[in-house]
Every structure is written in structure tokens, then in C-alpha cells.
Image (cartoon, rainbow over all chains, first blue to last red; front, side):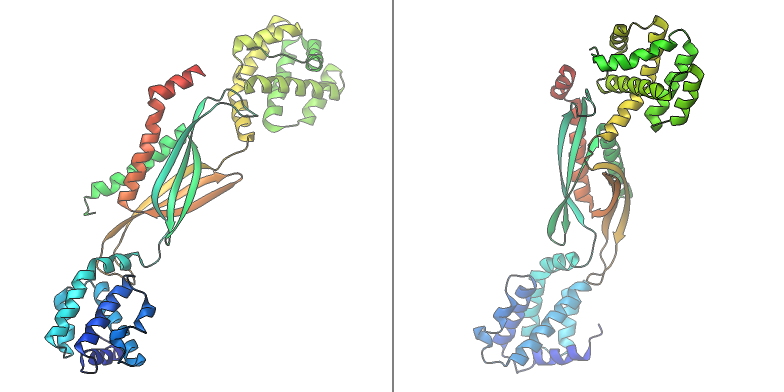
Length: 193
Length: 200
């Protein structure tokens, strides 16, 4: 895997004696927790285990760890390849195994976060419906036809919005037929879902 | 149910008695009424027939409007054929004129109801749905994944505008939505719903 010179320098720092093992472990753990939103990034500045280190070193180490995480999860690397990267840069076995341990633990949540990052159309997640019987209106009496109210719940970057519309019986039948056609299209393909 | 004609309305319609003898003239008259219902005012036709029967065009216009109003009200209330004919008896028209009017009413009833339903205030309603199945293989943040995604183009009519919105969904959500909407559709066949629709 091709790594940038910045990243290589960062890795050298991470594996070196400038960081004690305890500080290394804390930084790695903190980075994983920050990415999965379990910890606030600001807390890194004034956390006790890192009191001895300068801000610059903390920053560089942190960004290096984040870059490695992002590169590996994006490329779907398994732990072996991760170990290779560290070995090539002279990490101690202890540090390598600590990193890999966190990587395996957090891999699934990271994949989820990464797959939902990116742009997409508003995503339909749910539907609500209601059926009324339309009796009459001011321009037409004796209608006696069913009227459906349909409301799609649409997620747009985490914000729920709604798409609401009505449909007569024939329009509803039309809609349901088309949707069933669409679902069976995927079922016919026999893809792993 | 019978239509009750107001005195003014009866007066306006009574001018039709002038043509009661000539059925072909009445037919032409009804044709004008049908045209009026579909396209609105037809001044040229009024002038033409007014000259033919030696009456003032305004009288003709009043008569056409009265007749159109009769058909409209009957269609709005979905009056049955027999009831419509009975309602005409009060005007004392000859039988063949009554038959002609009934025939015209039955033939335009559906279209008039269609027209009336469009005149009412309209909630945004469904028009069309197109779909497409894609498989996302990679993006900036992810490689080596196969994600089937459905893209849906929903067309709805909101007042005078046709709104098209592109939405996406995955298989699980689509199946859920489809099942729920099928459930909604099946409600129509429920005995409870049938009973209510029958009794109203």
C-alpha cells in the first residue's frame, strides 16, 4: 500500500520512543472512540495520560492513526495487511497487536459509518397509510369511493422528512403493482442481499 | 331522488316549448348545450340558431344555460334515469322531447361528473412511479462493496403542477413499503368496509 511521506513520518513518530507504550495505547483507543462518536474530540487536548506530551505530537499522532484507520477500512483490509504496514515501519510487536485488537473490535461500526458517509438521494425508510371513504364534496355528491392517504418517511442526511399524497383505488393498485415488480426484479436476480 | 326546479329555472326552461314540435331543432339545441358544457360559451352558434328560429340570441343563450344547469345538477347528484324523467314532467314537455333530454343526460353524465371532480380542491395525488435498480460498487469512502439500491421517480400532481421527486431505497425498506401498501389495498375487500360502502 502506497503511503504518503507525511503519513510515513507520522508512523515513525508513532512507533518511536517519543511516545511511551501507555501514551500510545491511550492515543489509539481514543482515536477509535472518537471516530465512532463514543468520545468527544476536544477531550483529547486535556486528557491526563497525555499531559507530558506537546500538543504538536498529540496532533500528529492522532491524525496518523486516523489516516491509517480510514485507509484500511476504506480498502477493506484485513488485520494481516494492517500488521504489514506496522512491521514495515518498525513497530514493536506489542504496539502492533494493540492496534490490531482495536481495529478488529471497531471494524463493524467503522464500516457502517463509512458506508453511510457520502451523497445519496433521500432514502425511503417507512410508509404510513390511511383509507377514507369519500362521500361528497361541494361540487360532487354521491362519490362513495375509497381514498388512500400515503405518507413516505424519507431520511435526508439524518433528517426525517415526509412525502405525502393521495391515491384513488385504481392509482393505488397501479402503485402497488409497480412496487411489487421492483422488489421481484431483485429477487429474480438472486443476488446476495 | 327528484330534482326540484326553482320557479326561475322553470321559466328559463319553458322557452324550449317553442321548439317542442320540431325534434330535429331540439336535437340541434342539445348539441349546443353539450358543446357549451365541454368548451364554454359558443356565441356563434347562438346567433346561427337564433336567426333560424327568429328569436333573440340572448333568449337562446339563457335557454342553453338553463338546460346546462339542469344537466349539471342532475349529474352532480347522480340522479337516476327514471327520476330525471319524472323531474321533467313538471315542465309539461311532450314525451319525445323528454326522451331526447333523458338520452342526452345519460350520455354526458359521466363526463360531467369527471369535470366536476376536477373542479374541486385537489390534494396532491399520485400520478406515476418509475423505478430503477442499481448496484453501488464503490465510492470515495468505500471500495469493494456491492450495494443494491432502488431509485424511484415519483410523479405527483399538486394543484396545477406536476412534481417529480427522485428517492432511493434499499431492498428491505422497499419490501416493507410494498407489503404495507398491499395491506392497505386489501382493506377494501374487508367485510367491514364493504358493509359501510353498501349501506351509505
